[in-house]
Length: 155
Image (tube, rainbow, N blue to C red; front, side):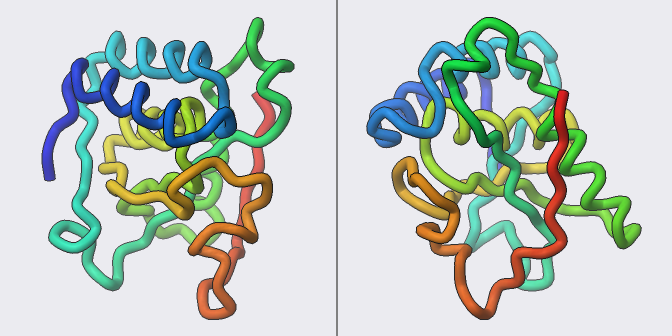
């Protein structure tokens, strides 16, 4: 695993903004999330899916859904980590990794924030290589991968 420093986080944000092709949250939200991660001083580790993630690892997607325009002035970054922690409480088992559902300025950085706050690595992967209009379009949407349990939180 490698630790992500300020420059790497900012580079990921720029790349995710381009690859998101206008979806996955606006750049300004990604900048706010990146600034929060960097200012926290918490370590952020990036896990290689092939080298660092064992087959039996427990992980979940952390994302924000809704209108990006509605969040521009008053975005609370606490909802995603709250939902993530609730997933752990459902069956009493700790999650080992955080995943991104899609690529985009917001939804590439939200999982990074959740990972930093939880003290666990974020996997260098996403369910789609761009922003997607619905979760059924990502690679995690497979008949062999259960989507439950699922948790949602409101700030």
